[in-house]
Length: 592
Image (tube, rainbow, N blue to C red; front, side, top):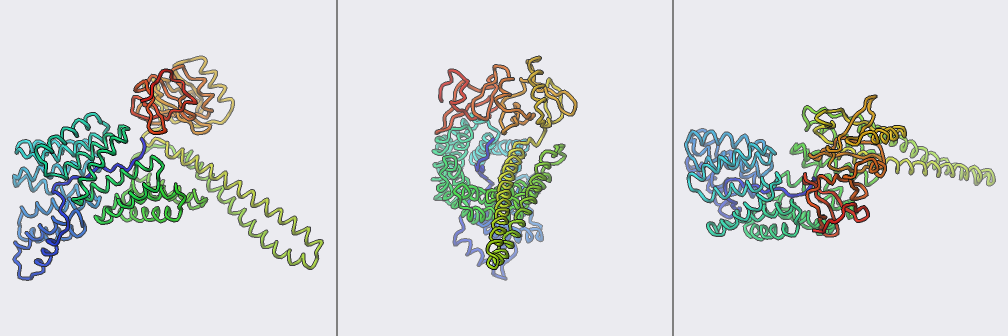
């Protein structure tokens, strides 16, 4: 599934309050030393509440001061309010793990206090935080509890806000039809029943746009995202604006209009800096670096790449750390600094290992390539040293040549030729190293994290090792001719099989081919040219692009989808496969 910037919006409890002169007035009141504690608690609540989403650090500071004072006075109701405010500030900063702990503490207090609507609001907040933590099951559970409470109390505003959040969840789990139906119902309901609630209306349009985007209808998506942006802009809803600007940027990146994409990303980054949201700061910096790289502006690309690493290291968000370091590695490779690229890639790999718990992945192939990269880098270093030595000798021999013109001239010419040969050899090795690096990147990015096993007739086998022996190919051809239900190959002195029915599509990686199953997971690799492999497969396998073969039995619809200049076919597991007329083996497919 392709990576996009579509950060789904965070709707947490309270509506957005802009930082106004009222906040300055409240700060001034709190400076009064004679102010009673109960009044201080109330003013701390008002101040923290008014700025927590626009200035989360300051909002959290005042919320903590008020909370400690409420604890001293044993003011339980006030403590509950502060828990709610603090969870909003923590989530706004992207610290979802801490926000979840805070919300759960607040829920326990609200349960005991029997304040149902406030409890419903906190369950809504918990659903959003679980959603951001990718815990979808618990997210749905929390949303449903919030809906039950709002429905019992006939609180339409809380009910609609929770429905909008569920709409976001439907988009993320690819229930697009359900998301679009719910989104349109919400827009009608809000316009009729709650016309003044602009923030929620904007969220509804925003998520309708994301549903269209994820289902491949970019123009319809942009119309709805633009509606959301026009609603959120006047009320300075920063969280919504950040996501909408990011979507505009992604749209122009897809159209290869990188300058326009950078313009929107910079505006999104300004809003992220205003609210101190580390997650969007890091993601936006990575995207800026990638766009500048495509424009060959490596100075700005490096600036934003380094900035993303600093933010990711500071916040210790592991997934963002890996993305940030991977981006620096790619940029270093683009600048031919392969030694740095190797070192940074090793760091990114170590972060990935920490993220995946209990993994049983074999890393032998990746490590072999890493060592090959390092070995070639050492050879290049030696060649550079040789070039430097020859240059020094050239200078010395030039002086000697002035003394002994004839002898010195011939020696100088010979050694200069040797230096040029050494330089040429170093350049050739650098090109080889770049090819190895690209091979490593492709192998690393396509490797399935969860499994490398192959399921054949409900039997699990071990990962496929690549074999370059030509006799192996001949055996495959011979084995195929004997059996037409699976492809057979030799691995570790054992015969392994992949059932044709398990293969949804095949992707080419130069001389090795990768098989993918219903879950879009790679279930095997084989060292064989794609054209040769195609000859072995049954008739239901067709080549639709120079790098792809698909199983026609798993096509979602018999039509070719056209988006701009690009064409693709859709498989029944929602995977999009590029399509080219040069390899059109699917007869009678109309354009969408």
